[in-house]
Amino acid sequence: MSEVLLLAMAISAAIGLLHAVYVYRLEIQDAESGRRIFSVARAGYYAFWTFVLWLLLGSYALSFWLLSVLVYALYRAAKFIAHPGTSPRESTIDFPGNESTPEDTAKGM
Image 1 (cartoon, rainbow, N blue to C red):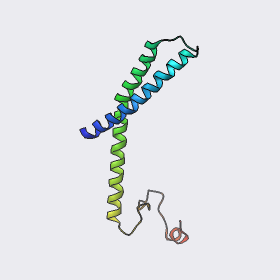
Image 2: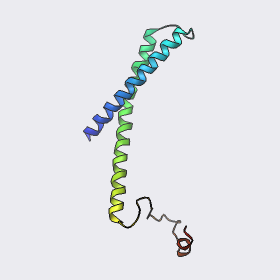
Image 3: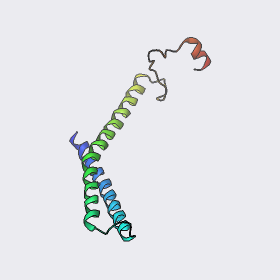
Image 4: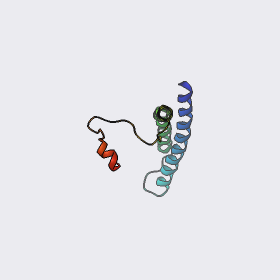
């Protein structure tokens, strides 16, 4: 689990750094165009917090995303192994109120 968090943190750090550079350049561009008062400190402040928030929140979001993709792939593989004659895209789960009747299967529903 710690390896997944480290991987997610490295990915979010890279994305956060790119986003922070973008925010910094955007703030400097706004200041040069006269829309805002030029402030390197403000641009640095915005870039710093962009990076920090990506680092803190992005790592958890990416780690949960990576884990969900892994669990989903394992679920699909287990489903295919359990029912080898069916396609992995076919659903074999009948939800309550959604049971199929022999007439529905004959019609192709």
